[in-house]
Amino acid sequence: MRELLIIILILSMAIWGSSFQPREAFPSYASSVSVIQFGAVGDGETDDSQAFLKAWKSICGSKSNAPPLLVPAGKTFLLNPVSFQGPCKSSSINVQIQGNIVAPHSSAWDGHDKKKWLLFSNVNGLTVNGNGKIDGKGASWWSNKQHQRPTALSFGSCNNLVFRGLMHVDSPGNHISVYGCNDVSISNLKIIAPESSPNTDGIDITHSSNVQIRDCTIATGDDCVAIGTDTSNIAVTGVICGPGHGISIGSLGANGGTSIVEDVHVRDCTFKGTKNGARIKTWQGGSGHARRISFERIKLESSDNPIIIDQYYCGPNDECKNQTSAVKVSDVSYIGFQGTSSTEEAVQLSCSESVGCTDIKINDIDITHSDSGKDTRASCINAHGELYGRLVPSVDCLLP
Ligand SMILES: *[C@@H]1O[C@H](CO)[C@@H](O)[C@H](O)[C@H]1NC(C)=O
Image (cartoon, rainbow, N blue to C red):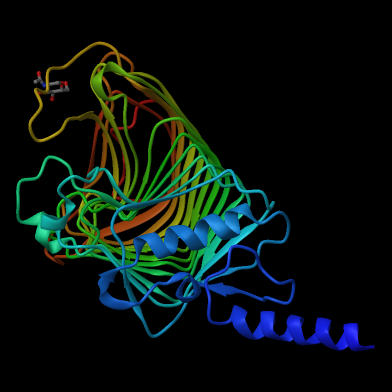
């Protein structure tokens, strides 16, 4: 009886003590653990990177049923570049971001790798969600002619990834990059950076398959969504894009490289004041293919180049010599486009002279000029396919 009392006493002290000290192991009753328990301060000035890493090591190392890791609301955590690495022991890992996470000023990056700010890598079954905000503090980078501006948040080699709910602002470079991941669901994000901010893509996907992007609002200085090399089974639905450079497949085949992109389906998206709408861009001299692609039920509000295939893409500082090899573009459908273009050339299908695009299908498009005195038109280079339904502009340059 006395032993039992002592045991109860020790147990209750341990439980009482646990709420005051960082712990490496969790009592089974813990429903979530907070970065605060690992020493994070959250005053927006203290570097909380080490506390976040300790918290990560702890949940990533817990054997089964790792408790969710909480970044609590009402606080701002300053993080230097940090990498949250797996593999983790638990088959599912949940990070709930309710508070704000901010990057240091660009001048504080000396000595750090400038490619990435926050990285999750090699974590299977990762869910990152919450109402929090990730602020890349990009303004101090954009003004300089930096060669490299970090991506705010990257996911590398994460299978079964769920990422939803967060707000992203002002990344120095791309906001979110996903590479080497299979089975990914990204939804309900809000991504905002100024229209003039350079290379601030919203979401970039490369080397990944089975990716869904749903119900996001994206306003940036570059592509809202970019689907890059070696991707397949990508569905983008309910994205509101603008300002920005549209939803792009590419750029593919840079530096003579081979790119394969297959089964990309973009549906129920809106472009508002974007530089492009539905874009496929490939470099001269590349190889591989982009095929089985569709853009369906697209709304346009004063967008430049609503439908564009550009096989003559080249960067601002590159030579743009025409070459004979190109990424082959085929089986691309544009179905149900409606709204206004701010350029007369609403449809531009500029395919490689040597390779050409085949099986392009255009069905029911009604794209008028946002300036009511002007008409829209289509232009084509070596584009082949079929037309269906009502077409404004008529795309009579499309070859059989
Ligand atoms: C490349 O080919 C396209 C299509 O024929 C043409 O419009 C463009 O002027 C050419 N560019 C160069 C640099 O020769």
